[in-house]
Length: 175
Image (tube, rainbow, N blue to C red; front, side):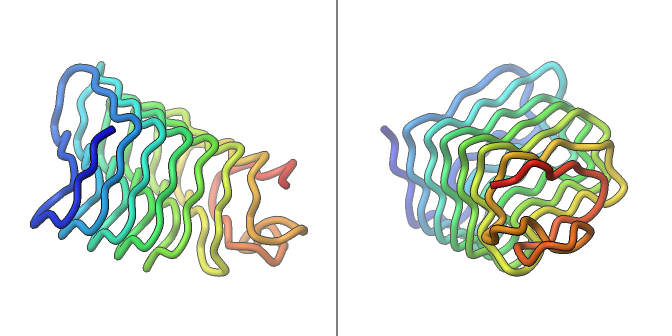
């Protein structure tokens, strides 16, 4: 039930953490950097984000860059991010996104470049006509059962008219 707003830095900061943490039922609005920063989270840590609303960030909604720990994001809304919705590039930990809506970012909704861990995005709404998921140079991820803002699925490597999905991921079936 926490509200974090009008910060001069990250909304919540879990950078370089060891150990497990959970954020749930929280609103983060108007941050000068990332909404949630879990940059460089170390193995065997596990982060859980449940029922989070992130809006109006200067940088990424959730930053999981270069992390070897695991992350689970569910029932979340990320919008109006000045960078990416979710930054997970160079992560070697396992991570998942489910039942989440990501929209209105200045860059890709999800950047999953150079991933070596297992990852998936399912049952989510990826609302953009630009790049929805960039999984270049990553282990194959599962991005099936998502809505890509078009009935014919994602564009990019997949030929639909929705947000682009590029790289090593599976998108079928989609909503």
